[in-house]
Length: 343
Image (tube, rainbow, N blue to C red; front, side, top):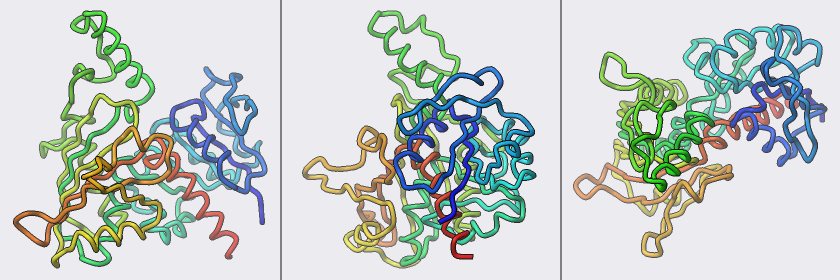
């Protein structure tokens, strides 16, 4: 099997660190892994496979100099906008974890369990986009059920961890909780969020748009259409909650035909990378704390609506830094490699 030179751009960030961890955990055919960062962090080290990697400065020429074949970007949209074209010019395929290229018509937006065939379109731009974290875990659950029952509508409420807003957001939650126990929460600053996050939930993620929905909510709408290759009416309410890691979603799915909860459970259990946790009598159901450091999406609380047999309710949880970002990116890379071997 051919081996590949892999670059991880933003390797010292939360998602970049997870990408390195996952690459070391799986049997990925890399010849070398190059960790890249801004000039400010260059020269520092990150851990990879029990060794220290020195961070190389991200420049317009580094991809050609290092003969990179696969470049995994997770350093922010502006960084991807500036440097992804240099990676493509150097002959690399870019797998981008930011929102910058997601809705570009010629750039495939991929969740390998749902639309792996779209990876083959990478040559149009040299870039494959990684969807939003909340979209990824949702469509993993939607696809197998849609195949059988045909979705008519999706309503989703998310419970999104602070890590979705970066390391500083996680630190802000921890600091506010410390301030709470020191009886000075009212003095605690909030910079990562526009409201107090400790002991609170914030029904706003990203900025509001003209239609009253936030950009995060509209990402779920638009990205689902692109990934599923058809427009499914979808309404989302995205909420930030005071957890560190692991996004949860309450889904209400309306189908064209009547649905059976037992059958739906079996369908999901057979779907790739989904784990069923659905024994309510034993308090067994998906929770953020049980998803941390896991590469699977957990589904439970599966039940048919009390008033309409065509409506199914379920609860979906996944590690947003892994399934919602790093794991999906690496799975795209794995599928890309498989397709190259088949050619």
